Image (cartoon, rainbow, N blue to C red):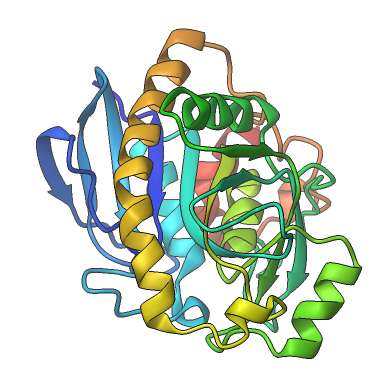
Length: 287
């Protein structure tokens, strides 16, 4: 059975307890090694590939993640849709800890991260006005609602560099801009998933109010972990329900041709070495 759905587990979500028929698959990609082996199994009758974003034991900082290898590995496995679960801070009073936000936009505050597969003599500029797959986001939000958690549909995820949490000035500024949640990882995943012609959506699990809130002006790891642990069981149930809903829809991946009109470099000028690295993504476009 082909693996079509990928799940990325963020802080606190290092396994998928209900996966059956499990096997671990270690991959090496042209961009290096992913965060760890992919756990492949059956969930709700569907073959799913799970990856712990920060590695076993949470060893990798956000800025240390090999986003390209992580996403490319899913591509090699045949994945067409990726659902990411991530811990975030809330920038709005009405989004308390344990709520789940399914954002539809990102705002980039990272510094120098590699967010593209291209370069090396091959230029591409993919459309990214709408970074989240609306269909997959709807599936995720419906799954949150179905398990009884409180969901907020839409919003902007500020992706900061970290690993430190925000300063008070930064947190207040993001609120003044109308941002909704803040995290450290999901933007690069979304950009690379689009280049790899996969659908991508985020379940943003609120763990704290960031430091703008009087009661959370000193966000600590203990505080975050307390709410992470409460969120993990919900996340497991939500992801299982979301996989069922994806299976039921059986609609085509709307980003399967995302790169078709994005490559600027003429095919006869594509460097062989670069083409070989990217063949899993662009092989079909070289006549």
